[in-house]
Amino acid sequence: MSTDQDKLAEEWAKALEEMDQGDEPEDPFEAASRAAGKESGDQSQDQEDLADEWAKALAVEEENQLKKEKQQKSFAAKTKEPNFKDLTSQAKAPKEKTKRDLDFILDIPLDVSAELGRTKLLINELLQLGQGSVVELNKLAGEPLEIFVNGKLVARGEAVVINEKFGVRLTDIISPIERVKQLA
Image (cartoon, rainbow, N blue to C red; front, top):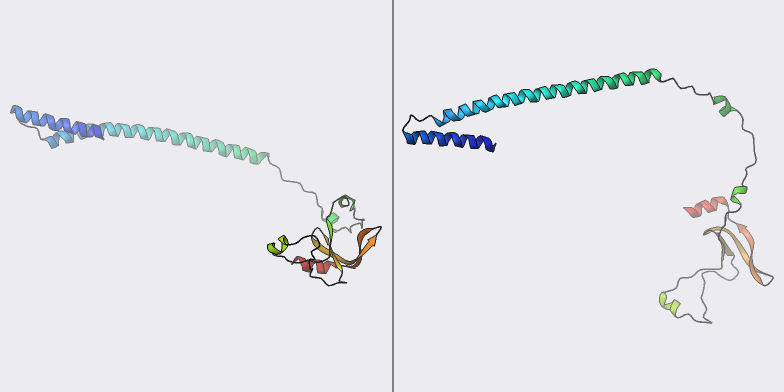
């Protein structure tokens, strides 16, 4: 765009020089329109060239599209209908009763703990505990211990001593329904 302005400025400068020399001044607007006409001729050539390039590009694109369509048709001709085996008779057949093989879970380690009772302490009370201190639990004497497996209550029992070690005799196993209720 600056070239157009430069050309226009030159035309005005020529017109001013002609006025200074005493010649019949040429109308600067006519000079500018002539210059624009020359440029429009150049522009029309550029537009024709651009149109030719677009036509070539569209022709190439159309040719590529036709190749893709032919390729798709050849792929479609090569494909076959799938042949699936009918499994409905096997699905409807009565299943053999087999014993479940649970041996693969027998070696999974579990964390089993017995809880005598619980209590809540403030940090201040905890820091004041010493040897001989008594901590009061939330259970009464004679109440059963709770047996937890991986943090879930599964049974209750009473404390016993066996060969100078503590043990728990199970008195109540938690039913599956009660275990489900504890989860909720």
